[in-house]
Image 1 (cartoon, rainbow, N blue to C red):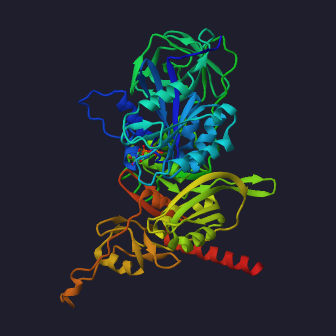
Image 2: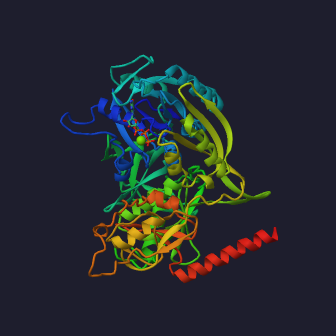
Image 3: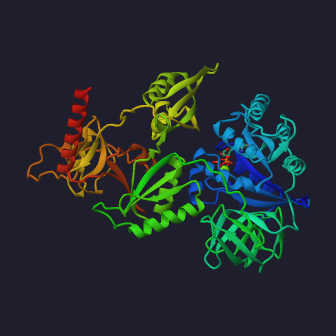
Length: 617
Ligand SMILES: Nc1nc2c(ncn2[C@@H]2O[C@H](COP(=O)(O)OP(=O)(O)OP(=O)(O)O)[C@@H](O)[C@H]2O)c(=O)[nH]1
Ligand SMILES: [Mg+2]
């Protein structure tokens, strides 16, 4: 018989990026006195991965369990950045309800809609949390109206329109039922979760079934499968079966069963329907597979994922500096690492490329791929990557490409820049509204292709005063060519050590990425030309020694400080004939063809082809 438990609640926290999800988990953990009084806990406790801490964003969904007045609340924190939407899709099926966090000043944003749609599709009971109520520009009444409109648009069931509203300052640790609340504690939010989110329903007496939503790796126990028990009971030692993705069923013995208490994993003697648990012993288990009693005939429905939109090629590093700085450099090591990533990073896809030393990696967006590159480089991998490009598909009337809705808020003075920049990228403006405070809101529909690398341009173009958000719209007909919007490259013509004299001459021609003392090789991109074409420069050139100094001025050449691009900037900057060489210590941009003579020949060939094309038209 279906029973609804009253002793636990499973709730996911979802929101647009930076609206305060992880800070809200901090506040709940602190209120529940999960920590000893003398324990220094810091902030954004669940953002435990070093890249999450550095970037101040959540990348992976995680869970924590909080005991509150006899009820155990399993809280699942999710990332808000659109590129990590796969993580939201992965974990939502563990929850019966969600806290939709909305910034009291910003209101609902593109990713608010995406995550709410996903949660409502799965039938979750929502609680709306209007957070950052302490902000001086908070406008809670309007934000509640905007959220209500969103619900009217997205709700799948009538009961979903009947959502509770709580006002919070996650940062200051209080919550209340009125927008005027400016103190107290988190008790009102706990109360609302317990009252509004239903306990999980399941049949404790039915055969055991669980959908695997996460994997933990343990050097001693191997893979540990995490998920929520849909039906039945599990005890250590029980014989179960795994419905594998390849269609086979594999019997195994559950060697251990774990539950979660606060941020720790604890061994259990028994777990029942509704519990979020971890099971050891399931062999080569993967996310999305079902673990079940041997009597069960069918797996549970697997996780629904949106397809990837952007891809790039990872290649074995074949630059003249290959193998100098990396620990893992071979094709086999690169391949193993990439295929291992797909086991947990489920919105990512990896395929073998045209040659054995190339792999095509597809993800949700540039940041999704850039985070993988950065993670691997920190682990000691060395490789090269090509420019991220969108994944095209063949539609009924020709090629189609992914589109995004771009929402921009910027000072009025940046209007010209915004319209010009996005029009050049084949964007169509669909809305524009000026507000009294001298700012303008825009909405554009733009091919994802045009947005690759746009974020930096946008920040520069608006003097850092604009905000920009994107929302995936789906595939539409190919929008046409988008011109190149980067200058030519300054390319090293010699291999060696860059010297001040050579750099001083080269800096007359553009912006340099390197400093004296840096090692360079023929074909490495050392800067950006001030013109459209690529230019070979010899940054290793030394001044001929003479006995007489012509003037004191050239004893010390004046060097402009170099502007080396970051990894993300490099990925956005490179053209299709360039690659980024990534090692644990360096990020270098290089030409795919290092040989200057062959490169020049290729450039001439491309120019003639273009001229012939023009003549034919
Ligand atoms: N003023 C104010 N700032 C807050 C509040 N809650 C969070 N913040 C700030 O908002 C920023 C983002 O908070 P996070 O908790 O990282 O947001 P998030 O939703 O987890 O972000 P992602 O996981 O990257 O999507 C941080 O600088 C917080 O200090 C609040 O109640 N009031
Ligand atoms: Mg977060």
